[in-house]
Image (cartoon, one colour):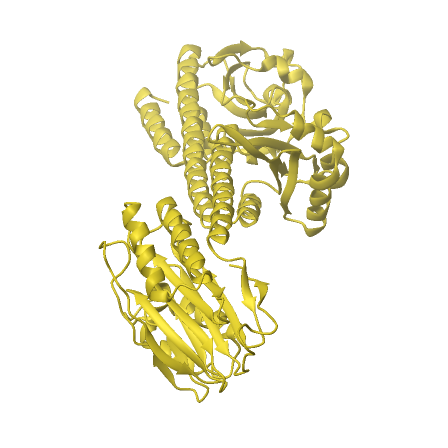
Length: 602
């Protein structure tokens, strides 16, 4: 072949290399130009995995059209001596002296008309290498053949490097997409158990065949979730996660500074993964023993748990340590966020419970119930409060209020307001005076927040009715559900608390008949807003009327639930206090029997 013909062939080889998805696709563009070179009679290529595993052998002789594969994958331990170093190695050999145990292509080369063999052995990647061998006769220009062999090998190596790089980029893109999706999935819930289950489910089968998640508690690793592509093996994983001493010892031994560790072969002897799962069948036949990786879940400088992946797949499909580290970091942050949210939620609920009465008075004459629901997703403690206070004259005082804002300062004012009003009303102070004295206390404390409140006293009368005295400080007016189903608003008004020094409050009086119900609430109920812009306040009277005949507990719970369902926007807490008058007449002075207490809950 003339030099200009070889240059054209080399150019076509480069073009084919830029498009190839595997090196084997270059065979036609490599073998044919060599056979067109004067003195070359046979081209044989071998591809090796690791030092001595032959993947395939291809040969093309003079007069042939396409290379033929002669040998399938097999192990040849003695061929390990041929493994190249860092640079391609060219050699001139006598075909008669080739050892078939080292050279699987020896018989083909000996049968070719050529008198000698020119070979080039070169590394493809960390595990794979290859050889091109040419059978040449005495007419060949050995220097030219050697040059062309080196040039062809340069193209083949560059092609394989490009294929590996594109594969790494594709895997990196897929891994980045998986990590992004995993973050979205894990961050979409603030429930600890749900987050842990999501961590396990995301990994299978995209990353591994099975996954175990353990949370670090005070007494050590605690199993929380497991999943596997096979249901039966998932049960085995769950049992191992809960009770297996080998796994418990492994997880307890994991230090805080350790990176992801991979375990296989003898390292899994005695483990539940070797005994319960066993080897899996590979796609091309044979068995694939399990491989296990353990990654520490670390967030904000502390270990929150561990995630164990089980792989029953070929080694080239195993994720690398950097990917598992990124996934573990995201999982750890999601779990830690859920844990912190749970701690904060419990703390806020505990504080909220202490700001509200744990019990309401119980009497045959009054049916009392309350409802409280937290509307803020950030879980700052709210300023809504309520209470029901038996009074010395046999009446009962109902109070409800709302401190402006949320957080610690609002909570402090909530406690001050409720306990101040409760103490005054228990002593028999009238509602207007009680509100005035609370206002004075707030001004003396130099409170930076204002609050609204309403106090209603219900005094039984000898004719079976009750007098309702209502005094309001800027609070939404209570509603009365009459026994005939009509709903009316209690007219009352007054300046909100904590703004001016000297404020007085006047009471509004009306009569309550047997079966009538008084409903007090905070603006979280009325200001719940649907997508169309309407407030729950516009439908509240009708919704209350539909509850005619229901007991106090059902009315309180139903209205709160309806407001939450109605709400598309608005995050205020909802507090309700409901009192239904039975119509039973009192004895002289105090109620016989006296009030009892019934525990309430948030």
